[in-house]
Amino acid sequence: MGKQILIVDDAEAIRQTVSFYLTENGYDVLEARDGVDALNLLDGKAVDLIVSDVNMPTLDGIEFLKKVKNDDKYAKYKFTPFIMLTTESNDAKIQEGKKEGAKAWMVKPFKPELLLEAIKKLLT
Image (tube, rainbow, N blue to C red; front, side):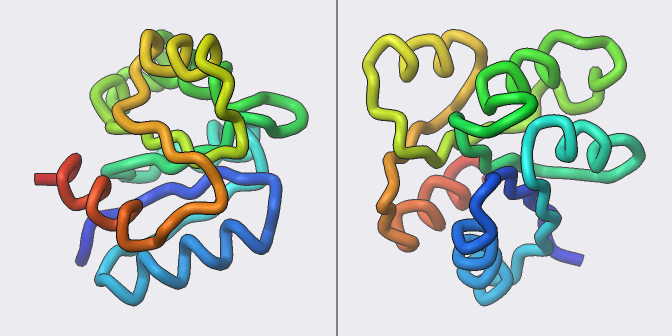
């Protein structure tokens, strides 16, 4: 079984696009519509890396990241790498995300090869 990656984005087209590139490169993929959906998926799943949007309804990407990194319920994911894949390019938001534990920040539209390169680097 390959490494499992969780994609969290409220845009189905983005989830499908990222999922396509990841599965083509041997990764197993889980998808979630927002942070709440993702937290529910994490309950009992093995996830090696998370790719998350920032601007989502219900629970945004930064709050989702904080919850995963700081809530004891998700302790086994405390060191799971996060890549934020978002339209958000505000420096303050980027700094907040990195302060909370995001390992990479990529702005949409993105180059699939750069995302794959970042994933490979974080999983080795």
